[in-house]
Length: 161
Image (cartoon, rainbow, N blue to C red; front, side, top):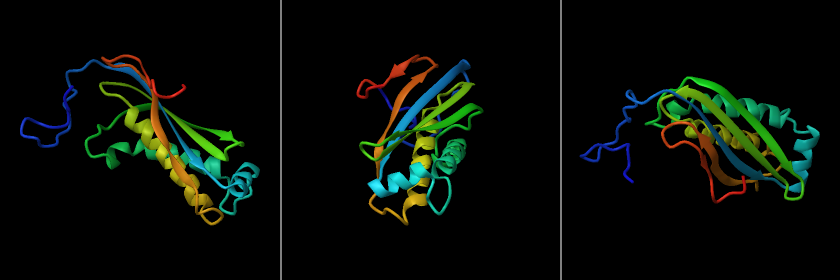
């Protein structure tokens, strides 16, 4: 396996995907933020002073995913056909899981867009809740699965998906 974002002299470059076939591609990424019991309860009840935390985080995640090529230097600009951010509330662990699904039909995958969407959604939750809980922890961000392209279907073997 070789790195594709370097030329023969070791210089970074954007991979030429011009000869690749267009295929339908989808990626799903997931990540978590852990909150204090009080903060988690306030998010669930919609009691944060800044507003509806999850609605704002959903829109922020979608906006972040759309800007991936501006944030990650060697990512291609993609014509995204779908972006969705959903949340799973885990009361027993005071955890909010963000799940971002990104789709396109094109020459390169949407893994980075899905991962960026999750990360921005989690950062937005942190921003909206930091007045109540500065001890929040974000993490466990990973690609859950992807489809399309030459490599076909990938399901992360290290996670229960």
